[in-house]
Image (cartoon, rainbow, N blue to C red):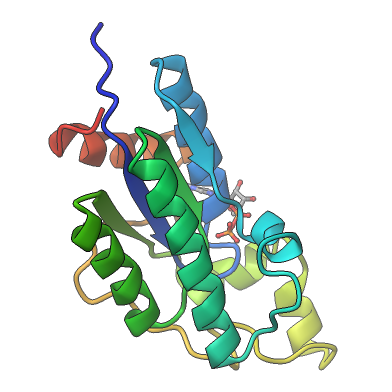
Length: 181
Ligand code: ADP
């Protein structure tokens, strides 16, 4: 089997508990198994290290996304498949990351993990929806903080009623269609 070493950034945007991280790690495992170099830039890890000190204002969220976009492009331009499961709620932040990649001639794909808030709030992997409902936190994306739905993503993945493997497979098919895997 021949393995392309063309790098690419795949940004998985969506609400908390939409399935971004789960799909990213499932796809990463699959791609590694095929011999690709893969990195997952996990939002929580990034916030602990690269973006420590940033909060959740519009400005800080934008800065966080630009920093991640910068690192993703560096990796992708060196042959790594970079999977980025990060909410990135603002369209202009996402667009700036896309432009940065385009300017460097680096492949960039935007994937909307389109799980409705009603489903996400039941999954509530980190208990954030419950905390918001209890008044313990505020500024939760999709509830009392904005989420700008991508108007024209490269792929929109529904996860409700589908398996993780199914969702990861849809993403792999997208990459294959672009000649990236
Ligand atoms: P996010 O990274 O978007 O905040 P997570 O990936 O951490 O979300 O959590 C998503 C949850 O939804 C996990 O518990 C996962 O097992 C579940 N889930 C159910 N179906 C799917 C699917 N088709 N794709 C991804 N996750 C799914």
